[in-house]
Every structure is written in structure tokens, then in C-alpha cells.
Image (cartoon, rainbow over all chains, first blue to last red; front, side):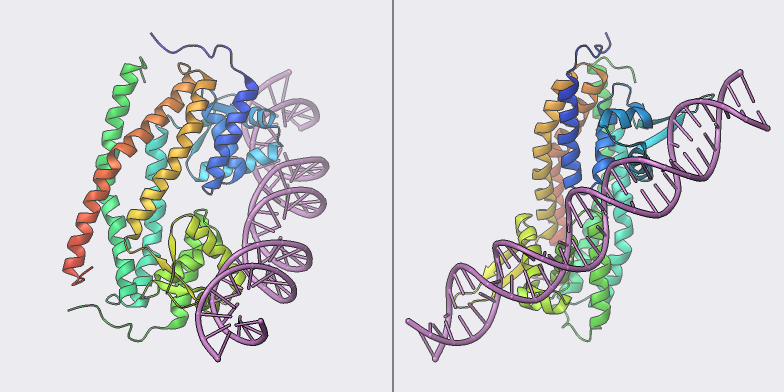
Length: 169
Length: 169
DNA sequence: TCTTAACTTCATGATTTTGTGAAATGAGTG
DNA sequence: CACTCATTTCACAAAATCATGAAGTTAAGA
């Protein structure tokens, strides 16, 4: 057994869901258009769309898609694919989405560490304020230490679920 | 042995660090003024300041502080304290900062789950797109399941560090 | 009760961000 | 090499965000 076909979907309801979830992401700091594009891709069975498709679906200009997609590529949340002998770019969400998002975020925070270390030194490593930043650095170190194990276990769980759901990967 | 006094700090360097780190937080989606206020508090030995102090330190109007502080209270990143018989509010960063921030973020994401579940149903639970959202829900469930253990271990590590640093808590 | 200090609210102006249309780019096709 | 079509770039306009000053509110102290 594999997955069901898309059957009958209510396109309006899908659009509404895209807006709602993109709103959550925007609240969390993602650019609004980037969030809409990203969620739209997540709602596509294939996880792939061309810029033109997205522009039509979301009722925005191709230029807006272009900008959003640049942001998302930069953040490694989508990849660009071009089929040989075609002039259309497909944008694709990664299959192992959450692994990537979490990994990416960790790399981002790593850059913050440099700034924090400077701050600690400016404040004085043995002052109360300096120690607060030292503790923060330790917290990040702790996360960094534990994350690989955590993500490995997630991958294992994910594989189990896919078996249960009859997916072949 | 306890911690050193603040000794000689370069106020300009501290200000610069505040701006730099607040910039990171702003990039990650936090309101800029809220980020500045938050970082300023983290750089204060006592972790406490009045609105007036902050306005002077950051060279902004009291109104800006008021708005920032509303945001931060709402996000549970600072608390308001008033000493009896005084008309000054002190704003305070939590001592166990990272525990709180992580916990809070988890609660935020819990609200996203409701939206995701709707999306899954609109798309059809057994379609490829529906399954993608189902997997996302599972990922959050997995995190939710593991987080308490993780945070408990952090607290333990933190206690160790505080012992090592000669802090009494 | 009147004054003063600390903070908040609100309307306004400034800045920044965002999305658009139009022109440019560039890759495939005849 | 010219044509076509998907995408990108860019200047600009619209919209959202932000910080401010001024007025308003609340509570302490005289």
C-alpha cells in the first residue's frame, strides 16, 4: 500500500491554511512572502513548484516570488532544481525538512557565540554580568553537545513512522 | 570566594556590545528596541533596571522603553518588580534565563500544532502533502517528549558550573 | 488635597520593509 | 542568430513598523 491520491481538496481551504501557518512563521520573524512560498510548497504533494506556479497560486508578482525564493535558498530551506532541457526552475522543499531546519539554526547560533564571548570579556569574566554571559555560552555548548544524539534518534523514529505509513523513502 | 566587582568597564564598549548582540536578536525576528532593552538588562550586574535608567543608557525616550518592556513582559522574558513604597518599576531578567526562554518557545509552538492539524486534514491525511504535515506534527511531539529530560540535565550541569564558579545561588 | 515623579498611551512623522511593473538577463529552440 | 519564455533586477510606491513628544494616568509624599 502507498499513499492516497490528492482526492478532492478545497482549494480555498488550502489557501486559507497557507495564510494562517505562514502567519505563524511571520510572527516568529520570517519574511512574510518567504513564509507564504515555503508553506505553499509544503502543501504541494510533490513539494515542487515553479516560480510561475507559485505566483499564480498566491496571486503575487513573479518578482515577489523571486525575492522570497532567494531568501529561502539562502536559508537552505528550499533548493533549486532545473530539469535538463527545460527553462523552468523548480523549487523544492527538502525531504528531511526538520533535520535541515534544526541543523541550520544551530549553525546560525554558532555565529552568535563569537559576539557573546566578546561581551563576556568586556563585562569582565568574573563579574555577575560577565558570568551571566558565560552561562549562556555554556548553555549553547550543552545544546551543541546533545543535538547530534537527539537528531539521530529523530531520524530513527522517522524511519519507523515511514515504515508504519507504508512509505518506501 | 564570590564574584569580582565590576572593576573598570569601558562604557562605550558595553554599549557597542549591546547593539551588536541586539542586532543578532533583531535578525532573528525580535523587535529591535525590545532586543536592546533585553541585552542591556543582561549586561547589568544586578540584572535589574528602571525604565528611566534604560532610557538614559540607550539614549531613547521613556515611551520606547515602555513599549519594549510590554513586549518583553508579554514574552515572559523580563518581570516587573516594584518595591513597596516606591514609584519606580524595576525590570528584571530571570535568573534561570535559558530554562524559561526554551520553555516559553515550546508553549508558543504548541499553538502552531492546532493549525498544522487543520492543514493535515484539509490536505488529506493520506496524501503526500498531508503526510508531510503529519511528519511535522510527529517531530514536534518528539521534541516535546524529549525536552523535559534535556532541560533537567541542563539544570544539573548549571548547578555544577555554579559550584565551580563559587556561586551560591 | 496638591504636587511631583514614574510610567503609559496616543497621534504623528520618519524610517524601513515589502511588493509591483517594467526592463534586463539568460537559457533553450528553430 | 533571432525568438520565446522563465526568472531576475531595479526604481518606485504603498504599507507596515518604529520612536518620539505631549498629554494622560497613577500613586507617593507634603
